[in-house]
Amino acid sequence: MPGSGHKISNSHLTVSLVVSWGKALIKIEKILWAYDGSEEAKAALNHTVFLARRFGSEILGIHVVVLTRRLLYEYLRRHPQIDIYSILDRVEEDYNKEFASIGEELKAQGVSFKGYVCRNEPDKEILKYAADNGVDLIVMGKRGRGLVNTVLVGSTTIKVLRRSKIPVFVAKRRNGKGEEGIGNILVPLDISERLDSVLGYTIEFAKTLNAVLHVLYVLSLHMYEYDFPHSVIRDLRELSAKELRRRVERISLEKGEGVDIRTDVVYATNPYLGIIDYALTHDIDLISMGTHGRKGVKRLVLGSVTEKVISDSPCSVLVLNP
Image (tube, rainbow, N blue to C red):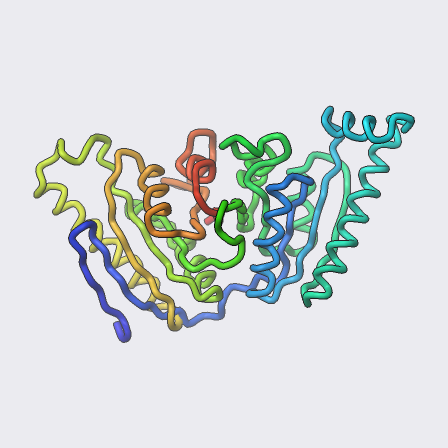
């Protein structure tokens, strides 16, 4: 293939190649930022603005008002004389003002923003608003209010991920590292499955961001490496690397120019542990994964590889519905 090459290292099998991707890049004209007032959601706006600038997108903000005990306590503490039935109106007013302020700030930066405040169940309203407004990407914080110091993924985020037909970007706050900038993207693939749409989308995503794309296959041994003969491990790695490279090259034949892809095969006792370890050791800024597994069965269920990666990932995760 013109412009491609490969190299193999001893530590783990690595194939590096530059692929061509000829069709038009993916269009992300509208990004929906789901805001629940949490610090995670506020940090997610930084990711949203970064992506909007790179893709030339309009940002739509949504807040769904839900009268929780915490919200009730906060407003009664600040406004002891307030009529309890007026709290929802006051909350809507406050978030509309906040969205107006955000809109003015982003307008000064050349980014279009429009806010929307409503009531109902958050996940349903987020998905409905996305569908009604032709949204191309949803950006959410990993954790909602009250979960800031836990590893749990917020319930609204999980519900949206399970039902969304469009890509969802789960933003992760990164201590000591700026929110903006995506230089390395990781796509974990299972070579026994044919989910090439995830790889195809992510290649275009990476090209727009001028990012290096790491395509990873985790060889799950279900026991420690030293329990296998060295020759068996070596042969499995080589066969897996060959198939992984074939998959990438086959997709690249359909497309255009200039994406740096590095394919890697590593072993681990569990796929998600291999993914997390690779992300940590290769300075990955974004992991891109699908929600479906073998035979089209949804994988984004409690205990799934995808959800575990989202929970423990050191970086943001882009979740696609193949």
